[in-house]
Structure formats: C-alpha cells, structure tokens
Image (cartoon, rainbow, N blue to C red; front, side, top):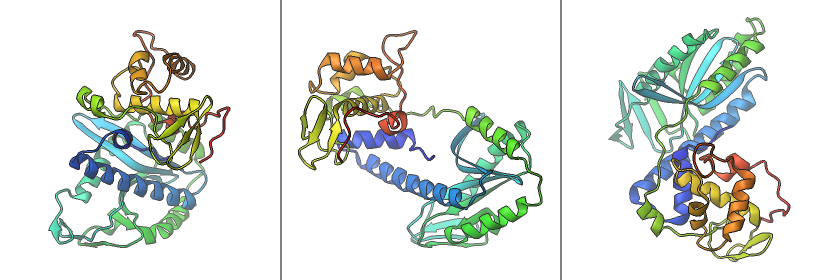
Length: 321
C-alpha cells in the first residue's frame, strides 16, 4: 500500500483551512505528482509480479547523518530490486552526467540519488544476510515518454513501456532458483519492522493556527458550508452527506497531522471545531477511538489522516457522497 508522506498529509490538511504560501503550493504539487507516480508504479508492479514476491513501499533507513527513503522494493528469489520512481512530465535530457529540464540545468542528479540510496540499502541487505543480489533502477513511470537518456548504464533505469518485459524476464530468472517463499517473507517482515519513522515532521505555528479556518469541512469538496444534524452532516455546497461521528473523527485526525508533536488534549482539540461541536461530544469520541497517554494528559496522536487510521471503521450512519 502506498501511503502519503506526512508532509503531503500536512499540506493537504492545511490547504483546506488556510491559504498556502507560494513555496507550499510548489511543495504540494511536487508531493502530489510524486505520490501519483508511486501509486501507479505500485499498481503496475503488483500486477506483473509473481504471487510469492513481496513489494514494499516507503521504507526509511539512516546511516550516520544520511537518511534514505525507498520508494519501492521488490523482493524475489534472485534478490532485491529497488525502484526510485520518477513521474516526470516535462522534457528531461540526460547526457554524460548532466541533466537538463526543458533545456535548463537540473540541480539534482537522479543517478547520484539512486547510487546513494543503494549504498545505504546495501548495508541493510548485508546486515540481515539477505539472499540474492541487490540492484536498483530509476523507474520513469509517466505514460508520455518525455525523458531522453544518453551515456548512462542501461541497467540503471527503465521506462514504463519496458516494465512488463523486465518483470517477465525477472520471473524467468527466478525459475532457476529453489522456492524460498519463506525467506522472502522473513526479509519483508524484518524490513517493515525496522523501517524508521520520519523524524522531520512539519508542525503548524500558533500564529498560523489562529488565522486558519475552524470547523468541519466537507469530505468531498472541502466547503465549510455544512448543515449539522444529530447523526450526520450535509454539505450545502455539493450535497454530500457524511456520518457526524466520522466527520468529527476526521477533523480530530486533521488536527493531529497539523500538530504532530502534540498529544491530543481534549480542550485543544475542541478549539479546532470553532464551537460547532459540543465539548462533551469531542471528549466522548476521543475516549472511544484514541489511546490514552499513560505518562501525560491527553491521548496518543497517530499523526495519520482519517483514511489511514480509521478507514476500516464502520459507522451507524452511511455516507451519501
């Protein structure tokens, strides 16, 4: 499963409540394009891969002062294949160690990034005694082939049109190996268990919090023009109907994303509703869905949006979106 980065979730939540700065608008665009590319790559590789292979996403590891995030990692009988996904729609040209974007120099070298990630991942590969080899590729996932590469090792990159054929050949290579499905699962479980959390979380300043719009916004169109009933809310802008408990829970999750370093204090969480929801109802939902902090007042903040934290929960009132 591909999960949005905390930065992307933070920017999305903020965008619904406050005008983004020019820099934040650029950042959310980059995050959106990257997420869509990884989502598409995950879907295609999942479709082409053999059932006993493991496909992992969003792994994060550190080595000294260096930190990497692995977009996608495929574990097979012959080893690990790491994919650094690029979802480019501008004209990119690589030649003899230099990148150009629409004719202008590109500051970051994608191949240097690939090699840096592989170097740290190699240490992880060796640490757990993984079977097989480790390799890595830049995966250009956009359907429009706007990337031209000259003078680079062909084994270091692959374009979308060649992905299916690459996966087929990888499957043929695996036929020469003994079945090690158990080992593949063990390695995947270890990697998921030891993947490190993102320690560079963005947090909203109190000044910007005071300026942002309070209340519940529509889950479909993000409008704040809603009619609040006992068991549901109805958007006056688009007509979407959502369970009231779900809307309150979704709003609490959004608050937690904006303040990832804070515990969920009932009084502070209550403030984000702008008086739209009674204090005792906010307190009741916090008690019902969140774990109390044993050492401090308040509840543990999952720092995840509603979809990732409570998307499986069924509510008494069904949405009509």
